[in-house]
Length: 293
Ligand code: GDP
Ligand code: MG
Image (cartoon, rainbow, N blue to C red; front, side, top):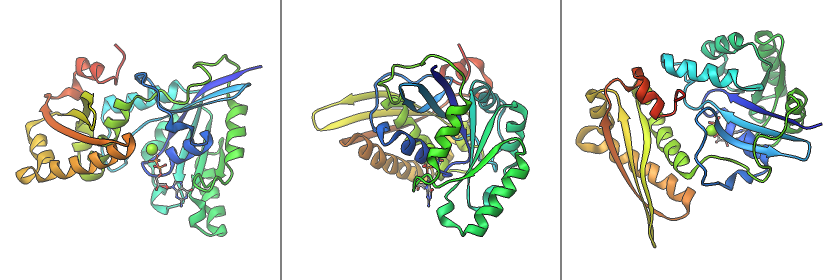
């Protein structure tokens, strides 16, 4: 009997989703294949075994509760949850995470099996761990709630066993020697997107889309040019900042991370284009991979 399935990990930025996948995969994720990523699922990693294959994906950047979620984003999240065989909802031991009403509402609506992971328990006392588990158990009455430390690999075997128990019987979806299908271009655009999320407020992160236009590897340097699409001219001004300062600073911070990732010197060109109301236009949403062609 062979089990296979898609596991979506949902949760706020920084709760530890990538750390969990990396540690479950045992650092294999550093192997990147040049294949383009699928648009339905943003794959983090694939864990294969003789008897099973788990395909992990996350729903990036859409769940910061302080932002109003747009329709396309919401249906994108719903769709990827609908498409998954098992859902992991990750929170961390920080009390600020407790009022995550937006996510909880979606999770209740999708009506799937959910495993709630309370991560970073290495940062709190044992009494607090029990309190947190109890708190989340009350919110997700029908789900298992585990305290874990993704970083210290505490309780990860239990997580793995639970996932496998909940996967359907199915053949493998991917060749067993592939660990991720995130492309280099995808990772570069994610690095830039993350910087935008961290540096800008209000609707800017949700109005921006990053596209890698060109990637040229030369002898001593890799030349990468990207376009950041925004919805309105006013947003272009905010992204650029006074005398271009904000964009320059964003660019050098992103370039550093990309250099670390590619292990080579990088030239990063960032260009901003206004694509009026792209989030309301099906054609643009299709081009960016948010809805099916
Ligand atoms: P993501 O945004 O949800 O993918 O979160 P990351 O996996 O990138 O982790 C965000 C930060 O939390 C990183 O600095 C991790 O090292 C840290 N982190 C992840 N898991 C744990 C944990 O179990 N304990 C502690 N103390 N830190 C953790
Ligand atoms: Mg992550």
